[in-house]
Image 1 (cartoon, rainbow, N blue to C red):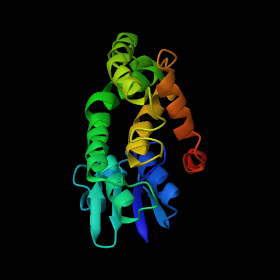
Image 2: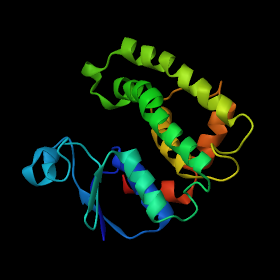
Image 3: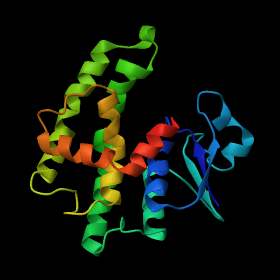
Length: 202
């Protein structure tokens, strides 16, 4: 049985979404970053970075949510893994891009608009991050202008990985209206039954 360490309202959501898409049995081991769970010695043996999620699949132990998703999509392929080496390269490209270009401005906006207690929120930081997010939003808009999904006409792990990061933009009330292709794509991705099941876990 696959074990996922984390809670739905964290980056573990990305891994849970993938597992729900694949229909693979798994156990969610509730591990909360805010209560000290990730700093316990038994968890540090699984992920010495003290972050969630982590995944245990038999003797294989992995951390980093989007890397876990690449592994799961390839091992338990149900049509989410790309069919050519070229599309594998594009999948790696978009996955790394989601972490290096997209996640930080979206997450910073979310933290300072929603998650932090009111006294800890900095409106200037939120507005600056939202402004910086326009560049990656524009890049994604260009990629989706003439196609339904990042690799073409079929939803793949590339879409899941990027959409799982961008989904925070909705929670942060970030304006996607100037990016109609991105908005439609995110609505299609987040409307998938597997994602909706994960939302009900939270």
